[in-house]
Amino acid sequence: MISICLCDLTMFSREKCLTFHLFLLKTLWILFPLLPSKSKRDEWTIKYYFLLILLKLIINHWMYRWTMNCETRINYERIFMFYITIMTISYVLDIQIVLVRILTRDKYTVESFTNFPLFSLSLREIWDQRYNRIVDRPGRPSDLVGALVDTVLKESIFEPIRSELSSSTIAGLTTFLISSLLHVHIVVVSFDDLSYVFYTFIFFVLHGIVCGLEANMKIQFPEHVGWLLTHTFLLLTASFILGPLIRKGSPFFMLHPPPFYNNK
Image (cartoon, rainbow, N blue to C red; front, side):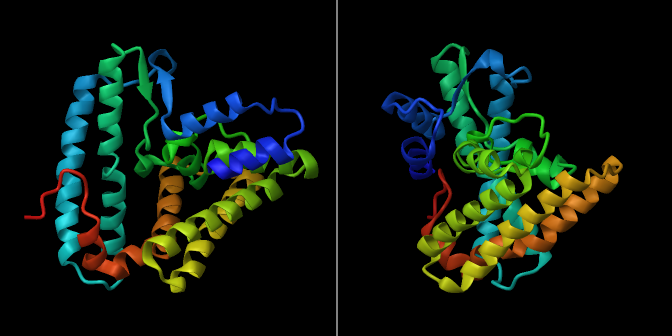
């Protein structure tokens, strides 16, 4: 992400102020996304965060024990359990939020990682407002930009391509393509297995295509129908991205226990 931002600021940007100060601020915000507390209208109380941290911690550690003993065969039950594991690991970031708010006397906070993706009514809502919020401040999605993975990709890839080609669809699909390559790199480094490359790549390509269809067709479904279609699609495609974690099973997780977990 930082490399993409640097390339954009130094090589492709035509109108932005190309200063080291600007690049440094963008980099620091990606790594440590501080926000004024007043900018988050619906910010929860610190007491609520303590309860949320405790709940996520218990669920995540319980899920970890389950993954240590489960089979490596992929099915929808295991996909759902791994999804819960990924969502609850955010208690680490919630701890960061509490510490920042206490140290700054509630003047600043940290952007939360997720906003209950389970409540999403469309795929674009997941990518724009519900998931990966650390580098994507939520807003009203007016076109395919509403489904982009994060601010760096939007500013450094989506906006330049849309400006040059005058096409939000092409820019959006290209951005999802770049995102897929980033995740392919993560998979190869983490598992040292090229057999997962295609499935990781196709996951983001499919999501990019569906987000493009949502943006261009502009079909409004009833809330319950939108929720059902969205999460059915997620469930059907989740094996592409979660497959490596499930197939590697307990040997991988034994080497990567969650924070505050005692293996003894």
